[in-house]
Image (cartoon, rainbow, N blue to C red; front, top):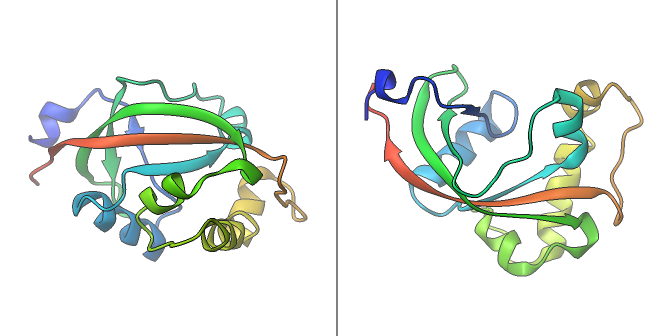
Amino acid sequence: MTPDEAAGLPVTAFAFPGPLRDQLNAAILDGSKTSTTSLVLEYRLADEPFPEPGRRSVVIDSAGEPIAVIETTEVRFARVGAVDLEHAVAEGEGYTSVAEWRAGHEDFWHGDAMRENVGDPEFTVDDDTEAVLERFRVVALIAG
């Protein structure tokens, strides 16, 4: 698929631009990342609709360039404390337990970039924080 063929699809950006986004995109491209977790709060702050099964979007790299088209296959809403091992492993970040997944995500969610994004320097998540658990599949790679 070419960038022109993908034009018009919504854009999906995993994490903030930089090394983490690059790592996540590599995992998407090699097939090891088939799920992602976002906070319900992120969607509300951005005034964006929640993902829906069947929705296709363009994944962008840290430079804002399109790299792939993904299709959402499943969406669940859950408390952070209820995330299961299957979802944690499918995140493609090498987690082998829910505790590892939680620690990695808390590092991200409690980081300066996220706190700036939500406008709260003391922002934290806990077991009851609402999350969006999305599964997806790659439907096309985008040739540059």
